[in-house]
Image: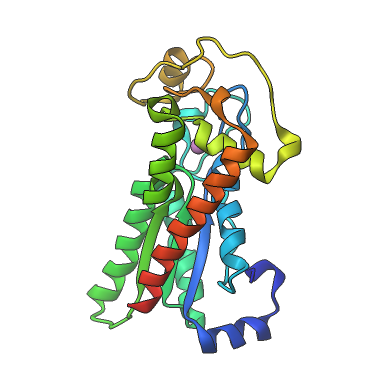
Length: 244
Ligand code: NI
């Protein structure tokens, strides 16, 4: 069930059965010469499609995240951490007002992690300062860090997965959009690794946008396997969140 394709009476009826919702969250940022700009939003959205087919309500994808370090490449859009925190907090507070209590943010971008956790802490802080018993539960799952996905990454790519424009995320986008596969030669085959600073430093040290990855290893069939592993990981987290 998708919020964007529901009516308000349908949402009201859902709330009689469940207080939980999944919010896919991603980014709009370069993913090297072969990765789509929307990769980090497409991946959680694709896995959320599977959750939706099991009757779980899926909110709109928050497709712009904290991507300042990618601004050296055309097409990237970022929110400041403070803006993203406000967006996440307002989304939660809007839905809480309707009766939602369990929030699973299914995330596709490592750069959103700390900001999302900080937004959760802001929501909790307001409730605690008001001594309000809110029975809220908020969880962040980075789809690429679930146990089944991690072991599949180790099995298929090991260290060639790297840190950015990874074959695992590119495979999942190819599974979702098989008509959007790019075949472009990449030099070096495996990108350099290193720490992330600001946008100009990033472009200097990682000139084609990849970090540590060899995305040529991706395939549509791998993408199907990542979809299935990611769905199982997300369902497990959803159950522990909504059963508690
Ligand atoms: Ni990514």
